[in-house]
Every structure is written in C-alpha cells, then in structure tokens.
Length: 95
Image (cartoon, rainbow, N blue to C red; front, side, top):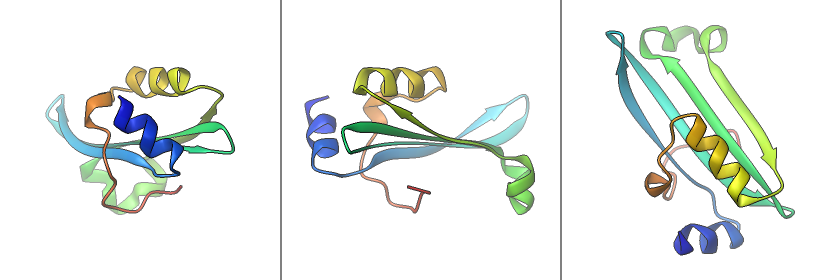
C-alpha cells in the first residue's frame, strides 16, 4: 500500500486490466486511479468483448472524483478491483 501511496503522490497513475468470464461471455475490465490537486480520480470500464467494435454503444465507463484515497479505493473495490493488482499502466486510459 505504501508503494501505491508514494506513486500517487508523485503524480503517477496506477491501474490494470483483466478479462473475466461471466455467464459464458468474456468481459474486459479496466481499473485505474490517480491523484491530482489533492483529489483522487478513479477510472472503471467493463465491456463484453464481443461488442468491442461498437464500444461507444455498449460500454460501462466512468471517471469519478473522491476527496480521500480510502473512498476512491472503496469505490474501485465495489466495482471488482483488487487493490494489490494496481500497478504501472501499460496502455492509454482517458486520464
């Protein structure tokens, strides 16, 4: 957890993506967090991989702002994130 806090305080983003099977369908999930101006921004995306060509029509994407790290992490956890998996992000995300 200390590494995550240090990275966020240094202006770095942390996140990860994974694929999960749900009711026989493969879904892509992305989670991310960053700190900016003493606020914590979270990013969440889930999409059925069979709908990737029309991502704008079928996505479940959100960017939210929280005043504390605990609240931001609680939100990501409620969306299925595993805090220990948050690491340097290799792909491009909206923030």
